[in-house]
Structures are given as C-alpha cells and as structure tokens.
Image (cartoon, rainbow, N blue to C red; front, side):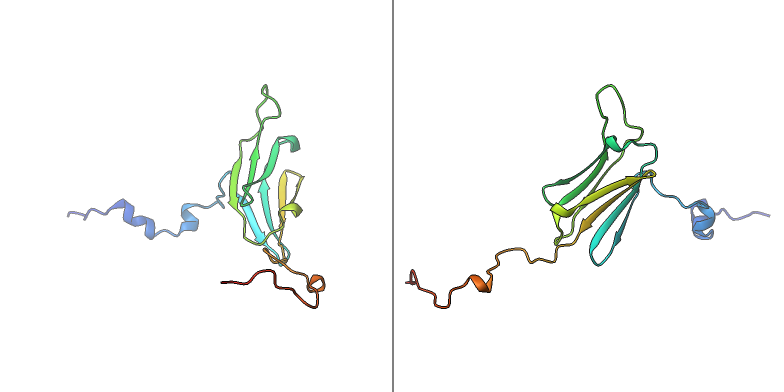
Length: 136
C-alpha cells in the first residue's frame, strides 16, 4: 500500500494560528497607538532603559521619532530602540508631552482645533474698506 505524498506547507492552513504561535508575540520595538477626542497617545515598553537615554523629537514638523541614545561615548543604552511615525495633519506640535514611568514611555500628541492658514478676526476689519489697487 502506497500513501500519497502531502506537501507539509499545505498543513499550515489546517492548524489554527493560536496553536502555531501560542504566545502573544509582539515585536521588540512595538509601540501602542491610541486615539482620544483630544489627542493621540503613543506608548512603548522600554524596560531597563534610563530616562536620560530616551530621545523623543519631531522631525520636519511631520514625523515623531522615538529612540534610545547613549548618554556619552563610553556607555551603551540598555536597549537599542528606534521608531518613526508620521504625525496626523491637525496637531499642536508645541503641546507634545512625554512621560516615562515604570519602564513605559507615554507620548501625548494633542490635536489642534484651530484652522491652519490665514485667519482674519472680524473685530479687526474696519467698517469701510478702501480699495488700494484695481485689477486691469
């Protein structure tokens, strides 16, 4: 009696994924993002890293960069970490705040409810406007 050959790669669809990977697998540089009506919140687990080794910066007013850096040339950070996120369009860059407690870094990016661009306050407009130039 001869048994048919079965391609072992096809068996991956017969076994549920929670049995193939029984643990909740998160990459080492995973950052959790959540959204509230007032802000965007980025949380990263950085156990063993000192507060002085963490650098959070905004690049080109469009990207949030979270990384670890050595304090001086003679030491290495406890963990090498670097993530870069594109920021949404309507945020308050000056209001970005970060906190580090119990190995968890939390960066809060507040939303901006102001309209960007040119704004004229109606109180500043005189009652009668004078025409300085006419189009040809």
